[in-house]
Amino acid sequence: MISAFNVPNRSVGVPLVMMAGICWSTSGLIYRLIENASPWQVLFYRSLALFVMLALWLGYNYRLRFFKAFSNSIWISLIGGVCLGAAFTNYILALEHTSVPNAMFILAAAPFITALLGRVILGEMITGVTWLCMIVTAVGLGVMVGEEVSLGKGLGEFFALCAALGFSCMTISLRANHTNDLLPTIFVASMSATIFAFIMMIIRSDTFILQTMDLLYSSGMGIFQIGLGFVLYTSGARHLKAVELTLLSLTEIIAGPLLVWVFLDEAPSKAALSGGVLILGAIVVLAFLGSTAAKEEPAVLDSPA
Image 1: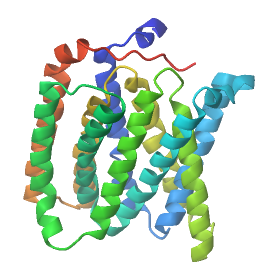
Image 2: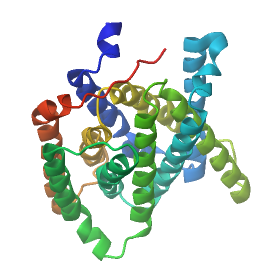
Image 3: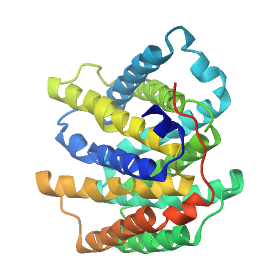
Image 4: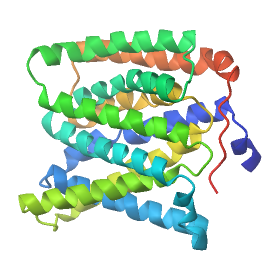
């Protein structure tokens, strides 16, 4: 079992990253169930719970070698962690200022940012199949968000775009950091987001005492929705390229709007549904037809300790 994860295997990476997207897709549903907590309170307890979870996980795996997890790649972990912490913050603000479908659909811009950064910084080649998937995704994105942007609903969409940028920068840092444990980057992100949310709560005079269910929902987002999602994502990252990582995790963009539609009656528009079908099609094509091209340039990554 361990050797299977040590050797790059696309058939392992694809389902892991897609399952990570499913975990992340619950964010909108859980956030809408929170009644009274402010975005900064949610961000604080969400990030704090993730921080504690990862501290325990890394402590268990490394024990007395805890700080060694960071010593081999401290600058990459810091850069990627700060970028992801910014993505955490902007995404919560996006959910506060726009609908769940719109916030998640904007995240579909991440593959294009990732592709550019991956090509310029890492020198990763973009295959013809991946280019085709990106074009289809671009069309789907245009169909979904074009109508909303034309109505002048721009603040939430701006926050969501910033979240996509942060997520893409984090993805590139994971690829650059492929010879080390990937979770320290997420650990740094949770710490930076916690500190930033704490400062904003002090500035806004927000209380640290929440209703029981709001506290449970906020903390649960850190442990299960985002924590488990990133454990799956970083496990799959060693098997796939940067562009593939972001495209495959777009299962979040499809499942998220469906969850709030089914359980909260927050229905996406017809344009959103049409664009979602195009993006889902791109994910399926990349997963099943892109394997041959991906095997030509395998991504070699060591498994976490």
